Image 1: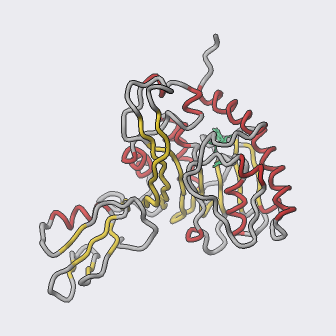
Image 2 (image 1 turned 90 degrees about the horizontal axis):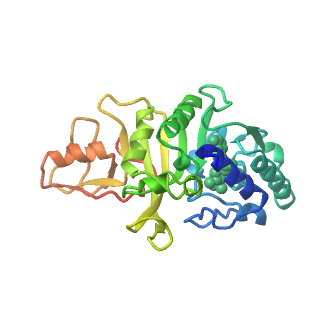
Image 3 (image 1 turned 120 degrees about the vertical axis):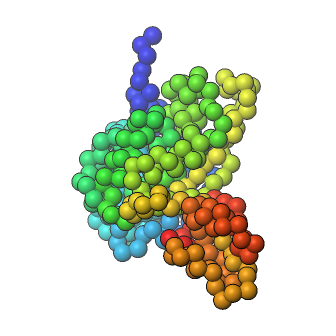
Length: 325
Ligand SMILES: C[S@@+](CC[C@H](N)C(=O)[O-])C[C@H]1O[C@@H](n2cnc3c(N)ncnc32)[C@H](O)[C@@H]1O
């Protein structure tokens, strides 16, 4: 039998998933965005192959140019277009012809259901996440949902580098992917089909974040973390039960701080002392009883002071902006 490269297996899996929608191939852990005047075609819903959401109105101010890599049935591109409503406001890249074709036909149907929408709002381009056909520093918001977890280490690094290259300074990369804190058994990692189905490529969250900051993103927000899948020994070739979660992460192309990236995992500092305020002389001013979202670096530095009038919360993994840095 000829051993196929996992990237080729992935393309074949999604060629078939474009020709025949497979409900539940990946399954979203969130309800699909319902917005006033937005109707999502049934086939698009059936081709929702993401594990969370990358669409957040907060990211979409000032007419951003949006890039979406790995289009699937096009649902999230339609949701982005709902906000941007301009010709070629959203650029979609996919390496599988059949997926581009399927999303193109879904956009035609979306035109019938949504008077505000025109297919020309989305520009579809054939291309590879590992070599994006996009100019440097030209994108305000880039997104990918449930594609990067499929990539092996060197390819994931390359895909992140490509995103970093095309995003403008201070622009954003929004990601949604499965993660797994346990060691994925080697035989599952090397199972190309399971990997393509977003089941066995996941890595621990801190490694995922490290790879994002290693390519240069100076700020990272963990916006959501939810239970996703169980791989149990009865159904999968594993001796222990594996717990997979899905995360939504936003990486911002801010300059890298000299003391390392700011990673917000939902920690909050609350000063409850008797002074007017507490100043750490590093740019963080805490007022009594006012919660301040802090990045993990700042949370660690405040905890290190050992004060008994500052409370530092655990990570909630639900961070949505604001805060210290
Ligand atoms: C799991 S699906 C996710 C689809 C979509 N993001 C969603 O949330 O429904 C992965 C998508 O990435 C595409 N894809 C696979 N390999 C790719 C690559 N190397 N470069 C770009 N797209 C790729 C597939 O064709 C498919 O559309």
